[in-house]
Amino acid sequence: MIEIRIAAELKAKCAKAALGSVEAAVETGATPPGLDEALRSCEEKIAKLPEPRAVLESSAILATRAGYKGLGKDPARYRGSAEALLRRLIAGKGMPRVNNVVDVINLVSVESRLPIGLYDLAQLEGPIEFRAGRAGETYKGIGKYDLNLEGLPLFADAQGPHGSPTSDSERTMVTQATNHVLAIIVSFGGVAPLNDAMKRLADLLETFCAAKSAECKIAN
Image 1 (cartoon, rainbow, N blue to C red):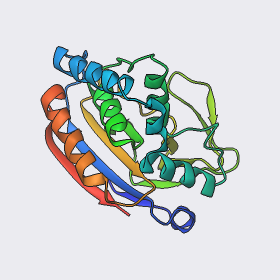
Image 2 (image 1 turned 90 degrees about the vertical axis):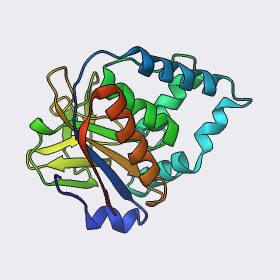
Image 3 (image 1 turned 180 degrees about the horizontal axis):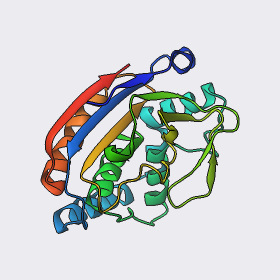
Image 4 (image 1 turned 30 degrees about the vertical axis):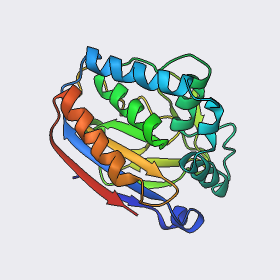
């Protein structure tokens, strides 16, 4: 597996930061009916809650916000991707449908309340470091404007920053041509939730993306 490490400077400010990575060969394509049904079920589950907004106060969401604040980034302006997806569901907008691999990652992110970065391994130059963004660092987020990375928790390979728990970059995004992926689950609340999330992710990739040889690893 590609090496992933947490920078000492980030760990000093976010002591419980931990990462769970899943690496697998996949077949990227359209969202299959079974996955679409799972996504609809997830949407309905949130919609039927007595107080849907209560999910925004889950321990994983609160830990992510605290991590951002610890690094000096406003979590109300730069949200973790799990919180952004949950807010989308609460607003009745539903889960986006992109492709089978991206949709699996979004489903597990909503279920676990944890941000998940997704990368095309062919576009990465390891090792990968999880650290805070530096002054002047930026990249074009997927379908977004250039992201101000200063103070933002991010992933950087030999070419520089390529992803974050808020928004990943276009450079390493998964496309229809992608056949080997790396997913990184981010927990600012310790390792406890990572094993279940990694197993769920690996299982769904096998079921809906023909994943082979999935490997899982924790860094903390």
